[in-house]
Amino acid sequence: YCGDANIVFRVKKIFYIGVQDIKVDGKLRFSINPLLPHLPLVGGISISFTEMPKFSFDFKYLAEILDFPGFSGLLDNAIKSAIEKNMLLPNKIPIPIAKGVTKFDLLHTMPRGVVRIHINEARNLINADVGFTAKNKSPDPYCTLQLGSNNYETQVIKNTNAPKWDEFVDWLPLKDVKHGEIRLDMVWLSISDSVEDLQLEAMDCAEPKQQFPHALLLTNVFNGKLSKEYRCYCKVTVGSSTFTSKPTKRKTKSPRWDAQFKYLITNPKKEQAVFEVLEFESNNNLGKATVPLSDLLTDDDKMTFESTCPLEGGQSEKDDSLHLEIILRVLYYEGEDLSSDEELPSDSENDSASDLAKPENSGAASRGSVQLTLQESSSNSSLLIFGGAILGLAIWLRVDGNSLGVLVDESWYTASYIMMGIGGVIFLIAFLGCFGALRESPCLLGTYFAFMLVIFISEIAGAIYAGVNRERIEAQVKTQLNIDIQDKYNQKNYNAITQSMDYVQSQLKCCGVTSPNNWEGSKFAASISRKPGNGPPVPDSCCVSPSHECGVQPRTTEQQYNTTIYQE
Image (tube, rainbow, N blue to C red; front, side, top):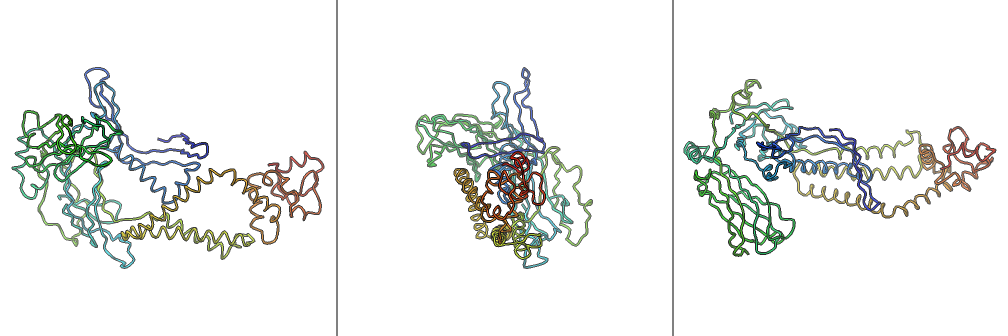
């Protein structure tokens, strides 16, 4: 999508924020579900991205401060985070169409299965460490796993090219690097609503599989009924896993959450689900309901429990209740066991990537994709380069400014000193961020964040001040420009001002601050022996067709003066 929309926000007729040239490149998925035997034939549509899309846009007006290095990265991360939470699978935007179909029905459909992934170890990794103490130091690798909007990160193994996480069957070559491989075990587990499958799966499990979850639990929290008005939320705990719903928008006696949480269960006979209703401001317990999962292990209701449960304990009263649903499903493997107990070849063996590739009949799911990455921590060095470039340019201009063909003066030196200060500060801040991230130093990263926060607040404060005092600032600028015209233009030690004024007038096609009359009585006009007539002498940059001494040529009529000299 390449849009030509020009979006402008205005705040109190002072501040303008604009966005334009919006571009989005990604795969958008439309899911039509459920199908109906009557019109409109479909219950609703769900929209989501199958992978993180690429996007770009340009800022206008006050929003251009967000293009400053560092802030642009923060903005990109915020947009990616918003897309992940709302539109990246398994998250989606629901659009109900038929009556009786709710957003909850479209958002929370029954899963088709569970992907179980074992990250075992890697070998022959490249030396990507950029430390300063050892030239050939081994990396500190960790592995990240991304499936839709779900992300997982292993522990960091220090100083090794062959890390073992033990968190296997195939060696997979890594892309975009010269060498390196990883071994993992990926299994697709189907789901069943039969208690017999749970019993068979449990009996069939031997070490080390018995530590793995054997069931999937879905908890749906719909609404509650309270005797008093509260702004509250619901917390659901199963074993060591806890999830919380969003709080209600306002105080109410009939809170509604429509939230679903998923848990992986090792032994349903010993687990229980605890539902707690808590006040948002104080976290006071308004009551809880406890449901043993063993109550679901019957074939009567297909391991599903839906009820309005009374709330007990805390500040609950007699009629307080919670409407909830619990669904238990068995995880089982239909295919052939692909795991292997063979010893890993040593790093000295030169196995080819084709020999270690994944076999065709590996039992992997036919849809979806898993992105697995081995990496070391890295930092965006654009701010460091930017600061170094400004600092280097300022030093060069100060030492050898005449190489540009400009007769330098004190104002030129002052500008170069200012650039040195700005470049040095930016370079220092970027160095703190990069080196702090590289060494994982809380002190350096905290200092970097503090500097960036001060800069951001300063920019916002400066923009607000400029907007509120716009007329005052404009008057001060005009006053200073008039002083430059009257006393400094074409005078000794003010070459930078002279050349700057000529450049501005020729580029903006103007003369003076408001009109050519601003040059009346100036030192420049006084230095001209011959007067052009019908107007004061002006620099050549004021001429519509610039030529040598065109601004002081005689003009017999006012019309001739007005047509040959810019009047704005």
